[in-house]
Length: 90
Image (cartoon, one colour):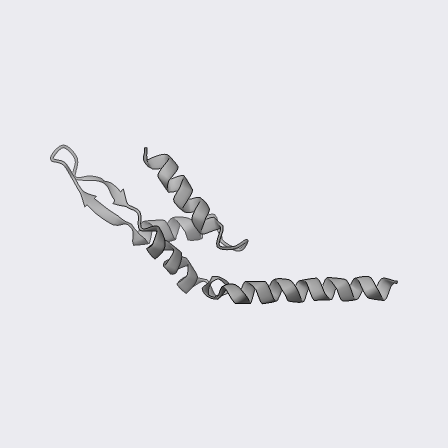
């Protein structure tokens, strides 16, 4: 059952922006997870995901993700430049 949960968490983290890479998502999930103690048969059952902490970790370590307005401004500036070029062609 852990696979769909981890896949959903990863998808949520990828939705933060186009510049989020697989290695960033994996690192954020691994570094913010809490190890769960074993049940006597195993030393450790697995890790408890903390998606909110993983999201904060990604935002802290990637300046473009830290402020959602930065992405919007960059995208608007690119659109303005595209439109200027289009106007200059006519």
